[in-house]
Image (cartoon, rainbow, N blue to C red):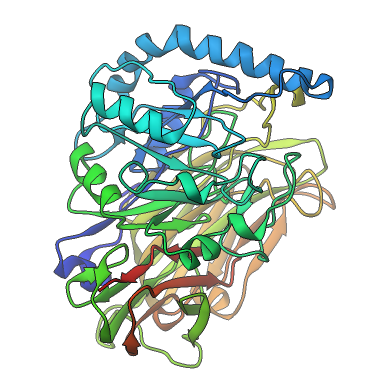
Length: 516
């Protein structure tokens, strides 16, 4: 039940092709190189809320600014981190194997190479066979050497592509689809879809540049899939809101995930494990179609209320779908009522933390799946301090009861959330009742109250820790299915979907490409 994914009845388009959505993070860091936290803790946190993961080590930076006195502190912790990874790399495979679970939790080895000239790349190996790191100064040399030593067993993908060329942003001229079938358009650095967006680049490395965006790369004619990863540096893969990837595969195995990456069957997500599927005939996101008129079938299952689904054709908005104006849920009208209950925990006086121990009981309903939406601390550079250590989180569920122990830090400012959340997909009757217990306090809520709006409260007085139950969406508010016709899809064009949710989370499909 914990981490149970959407069933085929809610993903019929994908299921008809034998595909299921799996969620993971292929680019994040811990104390394996420079960063914070034990590798074992990072893998355990990943296993709690993800289907696949790669915990990345910092390995190489050929054009590091060693002659710049102002960058001496940056050079220092990178050199130290590279040396640490070189020492730990051979032995860390055994740790990866201990956590890997065939069919339920897939672990890939990975490391990172920085480059001002070519942009930063994450390198993935296809399985847990013992392999050495291969370090080269440019993508072409790296591809050649990896193919010579480990044929068919390695790929790379550029990340935080939006930085300008020369400042570790993507170099489109050296991007090779034979080595990099996908790229990372979203992480804690920001979103690289377009020049302007809701998640700007705020890192000390600087702002984004329009020529480093997905939109620009597509206009140049490149073919690639998109990923979202956290690039988290404190041992918390999948940290909620930083970025996640959705991969459409037949099963959660190394080979199936690997094949799906090469076929670009991927989505970029900010946080919620949503389903956004684009299909034309037997071709889905990442695929290639010949020119002509095309019927696009669209299927969307959000993690909250769906605000809009945008159809982006060759850099321009071609259609905007609003389920509120055009209701068309995936679930049938005769199906039992299904919804998503989100419990969010945190707030309180700045600098404080609170361990929430409690339960949530459902009367007149049945819990179908539980999705942890947990965050790690926001420490990035080793110069910023240590990670915030907290007790391990515990989440358990039965058919009618959720038990949890989750530590939430207070929000550090009015713009950065540090709250923790648990999402419960459930089936319920109109008279369902929820009862939540936090320590010595009990709250009883009728489902009708949450179908109207959110409900919140504090444990004590002002500035004390607080809780919030999100409003319950009706099926036509968190699901949508339908189709539209793409007239005269021409050679060189592309089309992809972008979904925005009312809770601030978003997702993007990889494009479908038109090639003669």
